[in-house]
Amino acid sequence: MASAFNKDAMLRLYRNILKLHRRVLPEEMRSLGDSYARSEFKAHKNAKIGFVKEFTKQWKDYCYTLELQATKGEFGKNLDSKKVDTFNDEQKQQLERLESEARKIGGQS
Image (cartoon, rainbow, N blue to C red; front, side, top):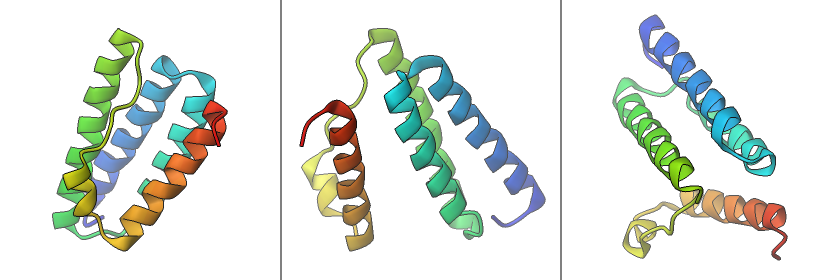
């Protein structure tokens, strides 16, 4: 990420996500969420500033949504199929892996 400020900001955001997971998610979901966040932040640690802004926005939206879901006691939401259609192949594969891991945790095959 482009500058020391951005690296510090990203580290703060990452820590906040892990704290949020620890506070609101059941253990199985927390483990999956932590692992996913770790891999995403690691994969994008050298991203360009333009990408970092969107990356940050998406993770902040995630935090907001997770907070709302925690107050209701219901986690998750369905993806809009139109949005999924805009995903590139790598994003679709990642979504499939995430779904597979979530089903394992949920006891579904």
